[in-house]
Image (cartoon, rainbow, N blue to C red; front, top):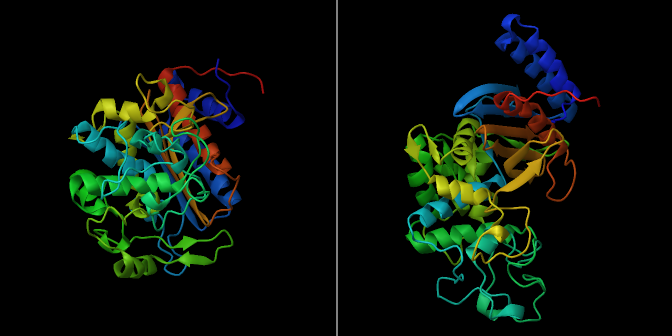
Length: 399
């Protein structure tokens, strides 16, 4: 039996009050708008949004506030945000496209461009694999620098900056450098710049306004300003464009390109929703096959349970996809991004192909570590209505 919270019971009463028991779009919209207006007001943010789709169709959306306090442009589905660590999950889709093509073996030991093996110096005989990197079991420390990659061959067993004392594949520790390695791998295998590869294979086929550098966006005019939690400006949209045009190197340079796939994706809300639909379903969106169904299912799986896997320890991640189970019993898959006052989330429930995009700009930090932000948990709790409805399994239990 599934537990339903107070908001869900309220919604149930609204819906079942409709003659014939069918869902009233007016009642559903009113209930949703009231819930999210209260959520965003309590979060005290400059702007934000929630988009919910199911089986490729938008079933609900709510937009709050503005992209920029100076221009007062309202947030809508075309608003572009820099989505922080959600970038890792989208970058992983690029890796899995190469897996589908037979160009990458997830359990093969990693090397740098000069073919020196990337190894934990305490375990030189144990390869570090892409499967370990994507499940955050590579033994790379969470505190390891990722802007400039290490000279891998120069590391010694005395190193305490990059690697832990755990053997690769045996222990979970979330590390940004794991995400950074994805960019290097894609460039090394394809000979293309990371942005070019991702644009050609994911963004352009779906006409998504996205790029890994702001000045490369097809349309940068809707790039939102990022705010700190105290509502001071972290960076305005045009500043992102100017900075990236000056600093971003759009060439193939796998030995130096690590930072991009850590958290540098700029993407529209509706574009993020489409990629979520591919991950929630069979890897296709709008008739475009981005990944095989096998690839997207593999990304969600516990890698330690797979035969012959180079991952033996438990992890909160499959292949750059985490999971979160709410109080209502629904298990969501996806990734969260946090930077300053910006919170970005892309989560999905694969059985019903329900996708949730959730963004807060100028939000308070919430809880620490990799746990889901409480406001995001609230949004998923609300979105669980569509999951339960699709399963036809409404059950009310006393609080």
